[in-house]
Amino acid sequence: NSFLLNRSWTFRAGGNALPQALRFAAVGLFGLTSGTLATFALVDVARFPPLAVWVPVTVAVMVVNYFGCKHWAFAPPRLGSEVR
Image (cartoon, rainbow, N blue to C red; front, top):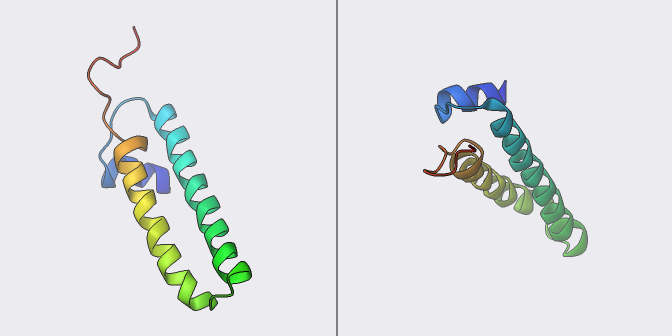
């Protein structure tokens, strides 16, 4: 649902859905991995309080996810980048 709603409603993307789906999954996996690693490093290694880490890490992952989707996963194709 997230892919379909982001593709059609949030970013109004057209074109081939398969490459967009793969890039969308990559953006999501990057956010999940980086958020998990940052939380581990800050809570378990640096001993910050979990609540003090959770909020900024969540906001950072949301921002990265939005711009990753906007400028990469659902970006319109560049001129001259079509496969011939």
